[in-house]
Length: 311
Image (tube, rainbow, N blue to C red; front, side, top):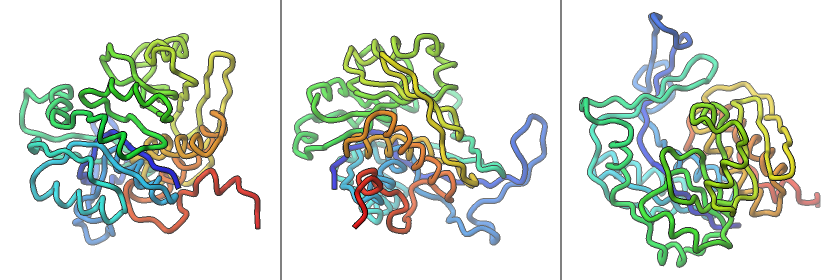
């Protein structure tokens, strides 16, 4: 068993299942958990930190999440769900609720679109991110007391630069993180091909990634949806393929991928093996309903156990 700390969002999502793919001008039928034909609850636990933590806990690890938690009834429900999953909630920080709700639009093929609905015309993405993270400032002494073996940086909370002092802790980060001038203290960066294209980073991606990490970077993993992706280091580029599954709900698949990568790296895998293991976890997540749900034991099997010799 290893100890992991995940920095990222936790939230309450409302899934809407669509009868047709999203398209301009379409007339769609959607149902939610309140519909009698669905087994889903009215809402469900979500957010990148919750999704990744749920996978790692299922694999038998001890996991804590560092995030901002709303102080209303929904926030308490979120906290209770995390505890029920076996996730350490001692690093949650109170924040005033941001008006609105997160709606997950799920198409028949399992692809999802995330929609944050709110009533404030001045609340853009940047402002919402600031409001959510304003109280979740990094406390290095608390992190050292937890003594993590590995960390995932899905969100860069205030003071994240201090994490560079934990240079012996294997760290995976989402990239790109938006407008960011400080060095990301990570050994491995994971970014989707679409995000890198949007940020104009796909030309010479390893050079851009190494600059973002200040020379600490060991490798870059570029994902390409459900097909697989590519591992890039200073010396080589190697493709990997995701297992073929029937996709039901892609929500949280990327978070499961990152969790699987870290699980394997801590267990001694090389970067290509870790990417392949992450792809297995991501595909598994996409084949299931929900993203941070209770699962049968060994739904997400650790890399250590998959490579251990048979008895």
